Image (cartoon, rainbow, N blue to C red; front, side):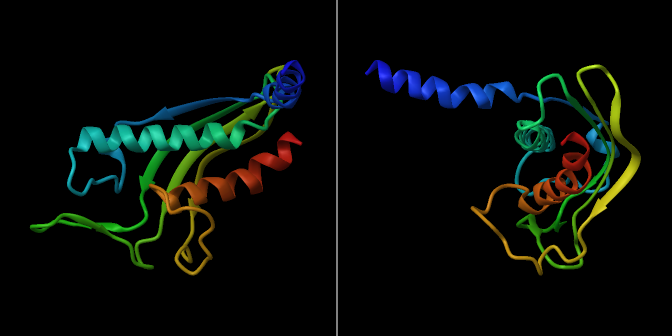
Length: 160
């Protein structure tokens, strides 16, 4: 039994060694282009967006070295799809309603040196429906994939 416990601890130590910090800043959600809910309150929907995006960014930054910080400020959000306001408010996902995010970000190392940064960077995927979907279909799938692609292309190379 002790051997199993030691094995579990040995596997967890490398995972704990890498722990980048993520700081996310939001504007008032009324300022964003398209964060309209379908069939729920705006406040609850906005909290869910913030929670999902925060969680996703933390997951992406989990492999950053200890002491590194990823700071992201969402300046504009245009979620994939468009909400149709009628008797049954729903978000319709069509190729013409592609996801678009405008962010300002920086990555600093444990000494405070800025490794990479950009102001008002626009992330968009006009072919979001033509790409293969991997994994389970989750909330804000296309928007999170946009963040994942940005992280892989811009942040990951600067951190390694």
